[in-house]
Length: 403
Image 1 (spheres, rainbow, N blue to C red):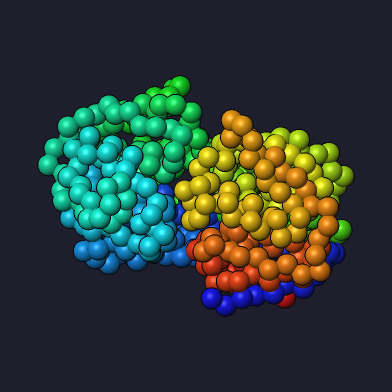
Image 2: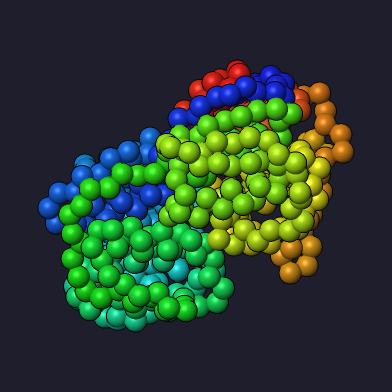
């Protein structure tokens, strides 16, 4: 691991940030493209390692789909291989093989896919052995574990002989990601219905089209946070638009309460400072990838807050709740777990002259804690961890003078 140290800098001038493309949109569009007969015209695909891994595996079509540490790629390719009858082994890094996939595999088996585990039940690696016929066209699947399981099934649903009806049970988490998947499918000619907890996708064929991937709102969130934590700053983030398909565009509303004014202009969004009104509570059920960013922002801006909807954070690249608790404590902030999965963020009352942040092989731990540089010298133990989603992140930090 190669560390990186950011100097203290609390004021920033007017800077334009050329944001990366959305990994979430890119990975979905790549699967849809692979399922579409003929040729689509897709532009602005993400530079993220997860997306580049997906591109390589779909192009080379090896016997083993080694997804490295890409959870989305693992889940999407598992359903793709299983429901299109491909015989593949799917594996990844040791951490990837600790992330559960049993709910998705059970659903695929119910539909008619032949899948077996090569190690521990419920976890990669797995082997897909073919798809002879559809056994079920209406299945139930939990909505509160991972929306990626649901998206993986939905994208393949139009090609199933009988189509597919998904009945989502329990609380529906990350609903915006499910809606993103469905809307992208619609842009490639697919009709569907989503009423209550029932999604219906009839048998049909994807149609050729042209599609340009939007910039990444998850990546944008770190620059919102930097403005919120700084004494002064004005950033223009390129490639973002109102009415985005990405659920993490919710960062506009969150940061409006934490001191960031947002104004959409031609080609992007302008961020400037404004008075803080406060964020007493927030539910991250539909945008869990923003939790680390918002926790750090509240910790550094003196905002005590109650967070809910963090359940899925325990099965991400690392246990993000544990990781947050450990790293926030290094500058005297706390994330306290209470009853009914309610977490209280207690802001810092004293920040040391230097802080060393452990990244836990998690790209978002590095990027979310970057705004700590507005208060103190901060060192991250692994600068390359950001390559998973935002390879140019440190270069963009240098653009604003954090280098």
